[in-house]
Length: 634
Image (cartoon, rainbow, N blue to C red; front, side):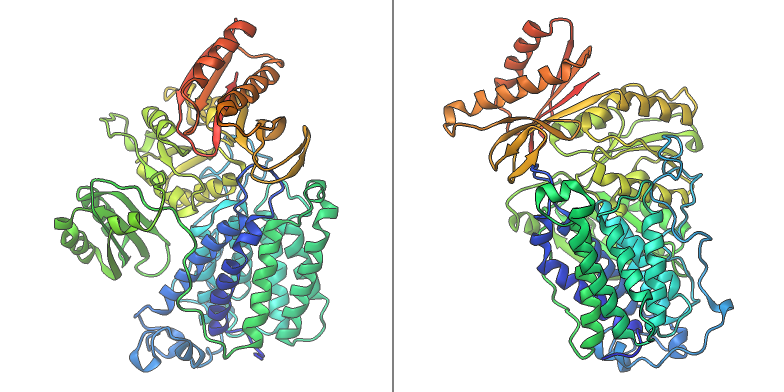
């Protein structure tokens, strides 16, 4: 058993935590309180920790001198690079003083959502507290090896965070990183203090904290660790994990929706898995760090006109990276250049799709900009053959057009959407489209793709709101002012973009867009993925559901015959429209899903003309999966 937590133990914890989350991924995904097929907390946490793990491994592979090794390099051959033996054999860091601590922000955690309760023009703008330190990870060469590795883990988690659960876990890691910033090796009392800071950071990340969630679980872990009077590291870690598990079991008592579904909180379950992995890493220090971890199921990249994917990490100055970005933009597409803001010079993750005859040029551009390493070239066709389905591209920018507006006043919009029709609709409105369930880094890439200094984010999903506001805080450090309009459906985003006016002040425009989105009630028709008790009664897998503002109001059980399938869908759609229009409305927007039958539009138009003759109807072929129909009523 380990008596102290050092950089090697953090590395083992990160690898073991990722392996454990992958083992429990399906189980956590199934802890969904809703019958709709959107339960992906386990997948989100796996992707978040994958990014954290990659960040730790990349840092321990770096070749620049490390002060904790007396100027030697982590990747020196005699240290064996980042292998478990090499990291375990690192000499202890020398004594540190407060002056050696990493630069940090004043607050315990930069809030992910606005502290004023969500005023549209305040959410995620550059006026917020978010800086490049918002993940507690900005540092140069200061601090201890433990602090720097922990910060890389937190920073990687933030950039890879997906969904509310991923963002909150990244803030938990950030709180721990803040505590360990100047600690050479942590004992039990240090871990207890780190968990307390982590709990505070998690609560600060949520505008309206709700008990019975992962917040309750991390608070209990901190409380359990704080009750231990011993300075023994393993004893404190075990107490934290046990208290977290007990708090998880209580979550159905705190949230009625969990009790009705008969499940515990999914995010809390993920945190318990991570804390158990921490105990395992401390109790079995000789266990090998997982190296060949199986990748989670990912969607294949979209087939484009470019056949090869070039990726590398790059140490370069921001100015040189700007030149690189312009060069690569002329060589291919799907360009992503994400900077961490750390190091001197900072490290960037570069990704671009190019033709075979431009692979060399893409790598040479990196050599001219700085020091590229971990270079990989992959044929995209190989990716496509390994997957059954082709998803939406990660980022779809609009067609470039001449814009006479000065760059400092140029405005842009980023919309989260999936489906060829919806993507085209939003691109035609001048928005950059990012695919479903994006990470913080993907949102940052989309913000950059707008080439604007004032950007509105439309997440179109409550579970993406935290990622959007986290990306907005990160973008503020790059001189981009970003506001998040908390849309929960693509139809609300369409309503918001319809009132956008570049002639207004940015703040006034954001308010107008938020008001338009809020005035648009949204409905959805989908197929139940699991049994659940809803406000409309009990539904079972395969039932057709009509949802209004996220709640199930209509349930239709298909009779199973192919001939009746279209009629069942039309029936639930008509009932949904009647329920929504019963509360008033003048404009109805219909967005047909990928599997909507061709006759559905005519059937719904005829019904509306007969029953609601005074409403205006707009219909679009959205092509979105999962939802057969999206409805907006204004």
